[in-house]
Length: 121
Image (cartoon, rainbow, N blue to C red; front, side, top):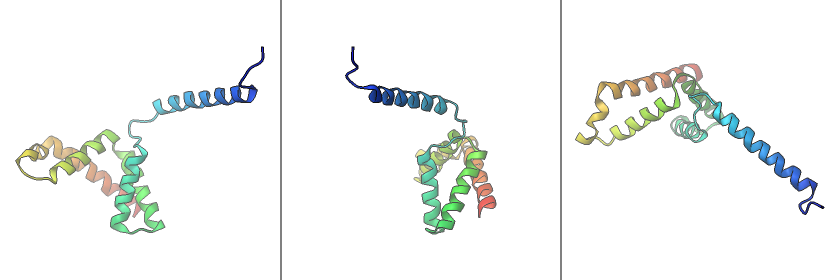
């Protein structure tokens, strides 16, 4: 019986399936502090908006988020970013962001940012 797809098509599908399985295995092995690309890009974009739109700043801002990622797990970074964002709204509804436990998360992120600035700028 002859294969209607042909050998090349079958090889291509098998290769693609192998890549998909390999990709899933890699994704499961990533460390806890591996930041999503979008989070890294957001940081670099904001950093460059403040410091200048140059290639040098791209390198420095990229270095900075890499340093932060090496110090702070992404879940902690994400929580601190949320606390800062919510806290900027002000008022009684955001008073919970000022409790010591929440402020510690923000301080930890600020320390990681300072470390990134010291090493990269």
